[in-house]
Image (cartoon, rainbow, N blue to C red; front, side):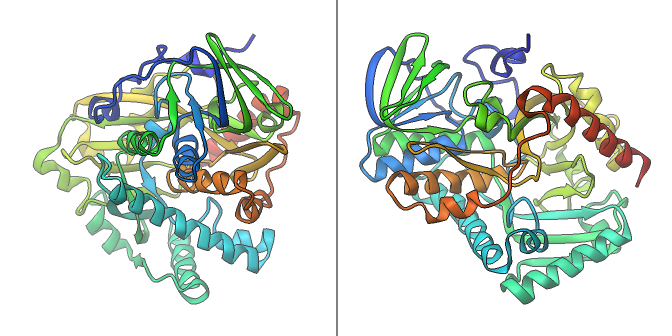
Length: 435
């Protein structure tokens, strides 16, 4: 019998011992659901998707109840690299080939809106989080650097996006003093945030708009129908509309989503504060992602710690996180071998076969958005707005996202895991061999 990812690596109702949890804004625990509750909309999951949906629905006047198994931002929303990236998860060339140029342009516009939403929500609701501009993409090979430069030119030419600055090998070495990269680019229109404090900010805003959030309220059963019933251990919600915003923690709640969305684990280390040595890591406070298949990503915290993410696992239990992540960190920064690691944590995100997010109508009154494949800070925030629009009868933008292909994994929910492990192991081996 498989373990439940909600409980496989974490204590009930507690944040993992991460740097983000140690520096989180105040947010008092909320009471679990008790007894019978009636709502216009029930939202399952208090990550970015669910909290954004709750905020936008409450602003439209809907009675909204959010059910969270642990704490607000407990899952990937409170554990990720904090990068607010441009575009969709796939680049515009791939989208043009998949859905055509017109829909690709609409998808680019939605992604631009998503980034703007993050900045605007932080400012409008006075959230306890700062938006930092800039994400660098570091290329390991000269061929990847040439492709990155060509893509930047395409974005400027075809989409009017002029925020990407191409970097030569020497320019990249000036930004990232390790000297291992062949070049790359900096996207000044992208940025990064403290992810858990952003989730807490969304929760505060949703509550202020009238949404009710219940923590420690794991959903155990859903009964579909004209008025879905959502059951927890101590209560149930009867609603007109149901939104499933569980991402990698969906489990067996909804087989249609589970067949298309696969949970995987990713890991981050936080060093001790580096002081003046921070200049050995980054010359300016941008976030970075490299071109490995299993992406390495990093940035400096506001107190000058290196936050370095890397490594994946495909089982339920987390591996030795320090060992898993420290190797790629030292491949890039061998001079940090003596630096103390103060925090090491993992979390579960969700991917799809195509890496496109999965926007799905489970039933006429049941919607789901998930599977952001590592590109979720902005897109999950946007998803909440699109879910709210759809509940209100304006589904065009949700349907546009829904046209992105997200086929079922081979073998469905039962066999997807061993098949994925084989595929991911192969691509990880290619990374290690330098292919």
